[in-house]
View 1 (cartoon, helix red, strand yellow):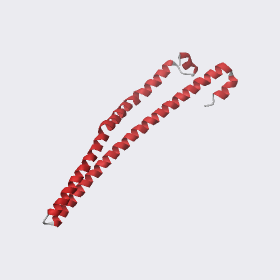
View 2 (tube, one colour):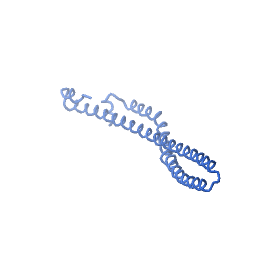
View 3 (tube, rainbow, N blue to C red):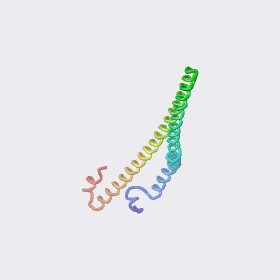
View 4 (spheres, rainbow, N blue to C red):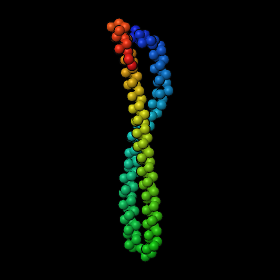
Amino acid sequence: MNDSDITGLGLSSSSLVSIKSQRRGVGSSVETCKMAELQMLLEEEIPAGKRALVESYQNLTRVADYCENNYVEAQDKRKALEETKAYTTQSLASVAYQINTLANNVLQLLDIQASQLRRMESSINHISQVYSLWDCRNHAIQGGSGHLAVACEI
């Protein structure tokens, strides 16, 4: 749009610049922070959580093998059983913590993406409204006031 189009919508160039700068001022620092957080989640946190779960799987296999061998070879079966219980409890608690951490990171990722989609939807709606006003103005100029009532229903 040129200045006459903006003026035809009832906005001056300076008010449009002011609106744009206000929208960028607060939103851009938040947006930059969210983008950095999103990048960190995608490139670091979530892959690290997945690696930790794979390592836990491998560790659980070794713990299970150790506990089985320890129980078979142990003179004191009760002591071997208690040791197995302790290892099992510790290992499962560790895996549960890792799953919880990874799940929280995925939820945070989805929240950020949902927020980005809401902002994009808002921007698209804004562009649509501005276009509708511009189109309404053109219809009014070209077709007279009779077309204005039909074309300008928003």
